[in-house]
Image (cartoon, rainbow, N blue to C red; front, side, top):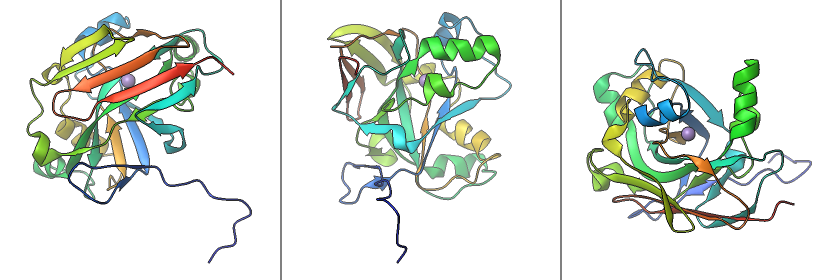
Length: 232
Ligand code: MN
């Protein structure tokens, strides 16, 4: 057994409805601009050429129900409500059928974002790490197996801040389907169990402040919740 100099990070895992075992998360991929109305509100266009991505470190993921301080280094922390899905089988250069079969489970997720730092990145043509790869900024609900959820389609996806509606759309507003994302992303990565993909947010993103309670739902999935306390 390796003698570590300090305690290694704990595995971050998600509960799965109807399973005793939990799903250990290895990597988090995020799709940019996957709803037309959100792309417009961000001053962009949806690119039907190909989906595109950024990543978040698993070390920055937290479970639904977390209470965290408002993060440092931003005056404009935003909520983004998203459908997440988890890969269940190895797929590389997936066919359409392989891609669909690789989707193991779905969950609700929050892609919390330092919008001001993301905008710095855009303005200066630099990476989005300070904007997106924020400690505690990937919030996940428990997962529901794909067969129990059924086809992705007219399910409502919604988010409230302190109970007030902020985002409200349906999953069939997504530009790229989960299987299309797997097909495309697997051209670049050997996707495998442990990979979780956040599929982009609908319109209505906006700022949150210390004291806010952020709640999100997708019909048929466990909800997601995050509470922000005063900055450290
Ligand atoms: Mn997002």
